[in-house]
Image 1: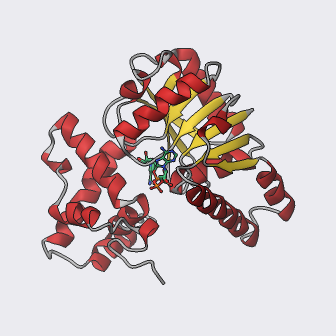
Image 2: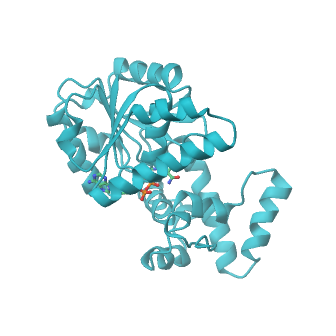
Image 3: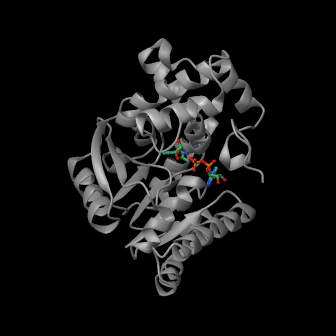
Length: 282
Ligand code: NAI
């Protein structure tokens, strides 16, 4: 099986790594040669970490790399059996990608999006075959977290869902839950209002960021506090999901705090840019 992964950032690189480690041939398409190089380097670094921690042998690492191709040429996807889109959370760019995927891969079994906030139906509507379009929502870091949300639009065919479930569970070793095509799907509809509340709490001077995070780690046994988790998700992605939740449900709990808007405008997007609520540059 050969899978195309479009976008090789935090999520796309993780998805590609999991595919390659599962013996699936994977072609990652990035927006430029420089970004393609960066994506390959981050996958190699993650595999190296796996070797250092004893989760992976040197042989398994080189076998995974043999399954991996990274490119900046979209047409290199030709002949892929399936595609998973994981580009930046921008509706228009994603629509363009789906239109091009549909044309380039007429025989692909499924075209999935890892989007956190764009309705799957809007992506399906760009194609001539909306029945094979669905959401495959992975969690960050992809090699570590077992969950995939399978998101079906009103046009997704049941055969597509069972095909993707079998692929995610039996080939990639993930565990799936099902969600309708509603903003936030299951997990973010619950998680994002909580993260926004933590940002509002910090913004109002109610408590320090360290104490907010410590509170949830030590008091609720969360592996990471809400501000660190926001940095890990990426503040641009968090903002996009908050806006989609607010558009759909009009719940005041999903209104983005001014601080989050300002940080995104300033390019302080969290771990991926080296600075968010915390500094990761060192
Ligand atoms: P990111 O900013 O790390 O990566 C996005 C990548 O897309 C960049 O490397 C960029 O160069 C590339 N890109 C942009 N336009 C492109 C194009 N036309 N063709 C090919 N590549 C293109 O973002 P991240 O965090 O990886 O998010 C990607 C997607 O995954 C978004 O839809 C996001 O909502 C979703 N997601 C993010 C999660 C997270 O925790 N960050 C969790 C689950 C889903």
